[in-house]
Image 1 (cartoon, rainbow, N blue to C red):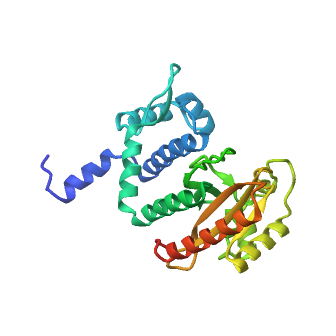
Image 2 (cartoon, helix red, strand yellow; image 1 turned 90 degrees about the vertical axis):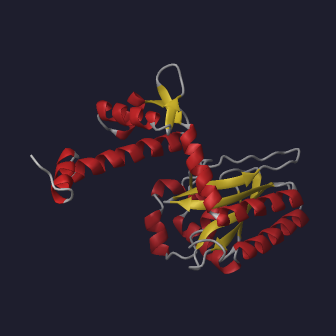
Image 3 (cartoon, rainbow, N blue to C red; image 1 turned 60 degrees about the horizontal axis):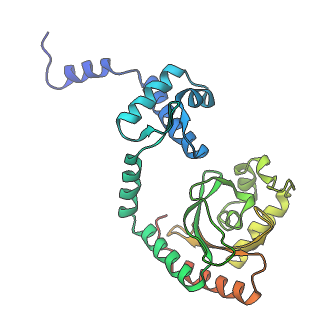
Length: 268
């Protein structure tokens, strides 16, 4: 059989590949593996991954082995657990090097941390959750640390209010799962109160809160607007609850000024 260099060869190549639906399912499951490891933030075995994703064990083993070969996952335990590999670090490093906006955020965090000694964060929304993208931990006796990348319900955070100002009330309530209005202390936040907080953050250009995720901290969040006028990021201070009023006012003024400098310089 003779193949022409274009159509016949392409037809044979296409016949050797899985059907489009099968390819799509494979890609979706590979993404699901990575998403699960990101959410759990700990090594998992292929069997645990298969059960969590409700996927065939044989398929997950095949995907995990291929990701290990690519260096995107690596063995991380005596019982067959895997976690992110060094190639993922290279991907992240390449992304950071290509994004001047995030580099400016890093410089802003360095500046704010040096000026105050307080914990300062760059935060964003990932789907319907809040995440810390980058942070500088405080240097005081009462150190407040941040877990970069951990997904947290938006109603638990000051940034959650500052990030949603471009959405209608209906869109906000559609976005946030009802269970996310249950705070870590067991209290239930009224959706109407949350909508009122979002409106207040929109009007004031910032939001301050305590007693949401922790009763020991005072949180300040200021939106950073992209070129499209939407707040894709926030700058935040996380202060001890007993911080002096003067310190809070100074920190908020620094956040507002730094966010103003960064706004419209970011993509969006």
